[in-house]
Length: 122
Ligand SMILES: [Mg+2]
Image (tube, rainbow, N blue to C red; front, side, top):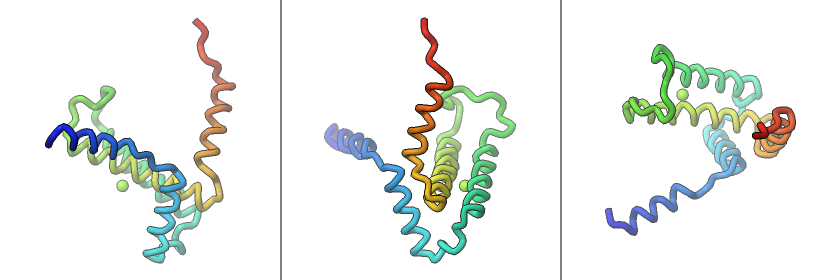
């Protein structure tokens, strides 16, 4: 791999995908498979909770884990990325089906949290 290619890949990784882009892609994905009939708020919530369980299993019985997961196998990290993604994608789909603009709601919640928990003044 030449230097130029490395730069190109780095730029590719920096392309941002918005929550709305994901919402649209998830809607298309469900439509193309005729799965919209199953995507009720309750079903999506339960599916997300199931994925949180799968995510939890990765950490189960390992004891405390260091930041950055320095001693983990690459395959375990890849698995972690997949389960984190499953949770995120169901969360985005759930918000969309409920008519919640998740980006807007999360921004507002961060403002609320900042007021509720003021920064420490040194
Ligand atoms: Mg999963």
